Length: 89
Image (cartoon, rainbow, N blue to C red; front, side, top):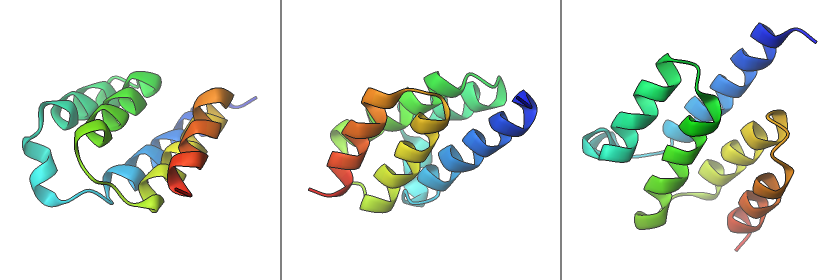
């Protein structure tokens, strides 16, 4: 398996989720941490920060689908199923 390629795909999914958020989300602590973790390739923690933001803010189904895709690639299957459910509620 080509790990750098997989990581790039996961990063793209996480960035796709982040791009669904409003511009002022950058002021939130969770999104600041998201950016730090992303820079350091801490992809599961990056996902955690996006989920943390969504716990207190409305997000779109596209957000949840992007997180689902990232979770699947990271083999976090329970999380992927939960994100799928959240996207279809």
